Length: 143
Image (cartoon, rainbow, N blue to C red):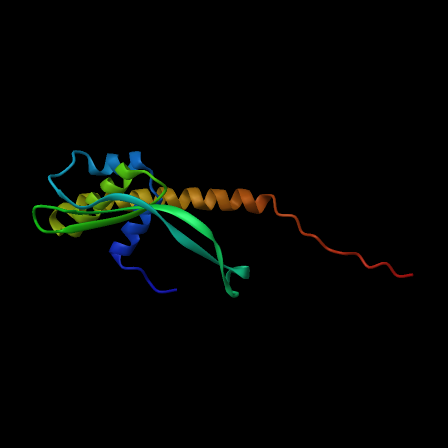
């Protein structure tokens, strides 16, 4: 798997975060211009048989996107599952702020802490699912 850039990492974290988590990281809304207002559409979700097999269309997912620009000229983008326009706008603002090295340091620490909490939650869910695993086997009777 290719290593992710810092921006790819924080964008993935923001996409998985709740609106309240994003709002708490951002605090007061910075001055900004909305270049593309939050809009909702659908995307096709693909799956792979066994995780590595042939691709197939799993179905559609609802996604909301937004693009903003800060007075510094930095542009922020976001794509969020669902129809939450506020979450998409807040995530785009955070993306723009994180690109600024001066403002991004403190925010980057908050994003890193959020990513750790998300990883812990995924690990817990994975362990719970593994605990319910059933091994099926067939006994062959000799006759």
